[in-house]
Amino acid sequence: MQITFHPEINFEAISAEYQHDKRVRVQSLIPMDQAEQVYNSLSKEAPYKLALLRDGRPTTLADNEWKQLPDNQKQSLHTETMQNAAKGIGFIYGRYQLSNQKEPIANLAALHQWLNSEEVLSWVREMSGHQDIVAASAQATRYTAGQFLTRHMDTHSTEQRRLAYVLSFSPNWHPDWGGLLQFYEKNGTPRDAWAPGFNTLSIFDVEHIHSVTYITPFSLTPRLSVTGWFRATPL
Ligand SMILES: O=C(O)CCC(=O)C(=O)O
Ligand SMILES: [Fe+2]
Image 1 (cartoon, rainbow, N blue to C red):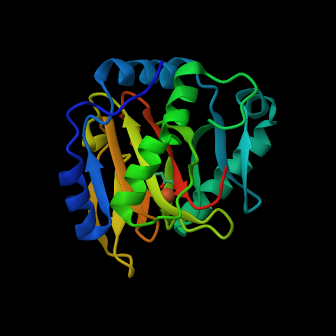
Image 2: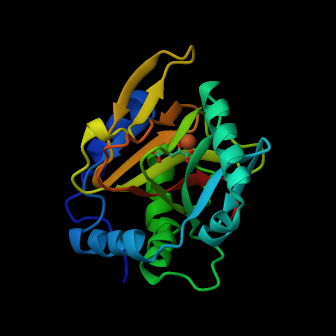
Image 3: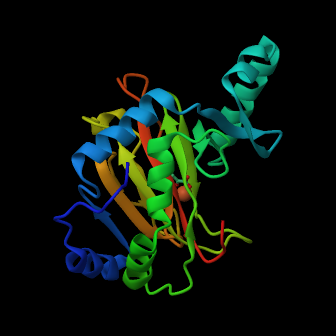
């Protein structure tokens, strides 16, 4: 599959919107048949690993690694995650990196390739004014009930991230299920929040403070996305 922009995208309107507050949402980013194929891979094919902090350091655990953990270690990881979260630190969600996979998943590799195409990179450079953007990192993410990502900024010491993006593939998401991309003022006051959508791109300057709110226990489906950063260093 070759990913393309949806033919009806209004680039000028998107750019104008971005200029207001260095963030914008784009509905229907790619054609629907392509979005459905990406969604199928995100929901059925991607082998997500659990991403979380362990002893204060970011780590991932494959399904089998998690299953093999003795109960007391599972319990202490859970406790650490909750105690950190109470202080506004940390995260827990499923993650599958799209770069450097030995056995890439075709639809997701196609999306990653397209995000790194000159077509997309030049659009993002033009819109944001960050002429030094050279690449887009990408990971598939899956948030299920009880998972979250606390308030943070996406600036990074070595990757030179310029913009964060979230391409959302969560059909029929109910906003009461949580999983909102919540924005904040510098002093922590909540601003507005963007709910998961389907084939919806949220793109914002890395200076924006944000979180993914807790996925409620009564959510019916996972929150699926492809997310990453447009950056000034190559992958
Ligand atoms: O999934 C989202 O909406 C945002 C994810 C995010 O903020 C991150 O991975 O840094
Ligand atoms: Fe983020």
